[in-house]
Every structure is written in structure tokens, then in C-alpha cells.
Length: 216
Image 1 (cartoon, rainbow, N blue to C red):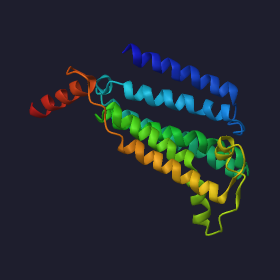
Image 2 (cartoon, rainbow, N blue to C red):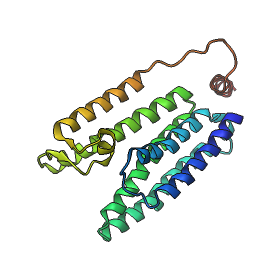
Image 3 (cartoon, rainbow, N blue to C red):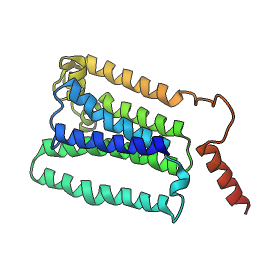
Image 4 (cartoon, one colour):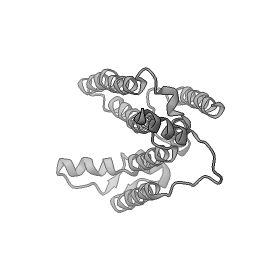
């Protein structure tokens, strides 16, 4: 429990610092800012992995959290994104997308944890998904869905530019995407760590609780 609450505090502090550092989704213009965006996500993923599902399996809280998650997206992000489209504010729209995407990843991971998935599953979902997000696959899909030629220079892809140190060419972007997708696949295939010694754990306790409930 101590580790969980420590991670919760660290996640909240890092989120507040990020808002102070990059208000209104500032353009990604440095590697340090890129890393600053990742810190709250990593801490939140570890917080979810450390969560004991038994704490929230009362009063139908998993169902409540599911509805609250949908409501937050539908009534929080969707109207603001429509507003930015009507105002022709692409930067504001994209800033919301950049916030929404990792939050959805964490929501998927949280519901897996609440459903009884082990901590290792939460980590694989979280880190494989963020690698897909950072790969640039979405940028490539944008041009493919529009049926237009992929540009030779990816000068809009800040998440590539800050890591490569220069604007990516089309070939570099393809390699960049392929490497990230390969890493995401490696994360998904990473074997679950076996405990060094037998003993009760949050996941095993959860399994015993479900078995006892099913037999009653």
C-alpha cells in the first residue's frame, strides 16, 4: 500500500509540474520537454500496476469507473475538440489529442487491472501502446487515409525531430516507425517475471477470492 500511495503522489506532482512547464500543450520543441511528457505517464502506469483490484471491487466501482471514463472523454474532451475545430485552432485541437491518447491508454490498462489482470499485463499494455503512439504510425496513416503522397520531409512530426536532432526524411520516418513497432511487439512478447519464491500476492489473493465467490 505504501508503494501505491507513493506512486499516486509522485504522479500528481509530476502532472502539476508538467502543466506548469508546458501550459496549454506547448509545442514539443526539445528532448527535455519530450521526456517531461513521458514521466507522468510512466508513473501513472506504475501506479495502476501497483493497484490492488480488491480495493475497488466493492459497490460496483469498476463499472462506475468505466462510465466515468467514458463520460470524461465524451463530455470533457469531445466538446473542447469540436470547439477547437470550429475556431480553426489546429494547435489547440492537436494539444487535446496529445493529452487524450495517453489517457486512453491508461484507461485501458486500468480496466484490465480492475478485471483481475496481473501487473505485468498492465505494463505491457501501457508501454507497448505508448510506443505505438510515439512511433509516427498515426502521421503515416493520416496521409494514407487521405489518399495523398507521403511528404518527403516530415517537418510537422516534432516527436521525431526532437529525438533525431533534425527533420526526418520519409525514409527515416519509415525506419523510425518500424523500430518503434518492433519494440512494441517485443514489449508484448516479453515473458512475465516469475516470483523468486512462493508467497501470497495481490494477484493470487484476487484469484482465490474469485474462485471462492464462484464456488459459493
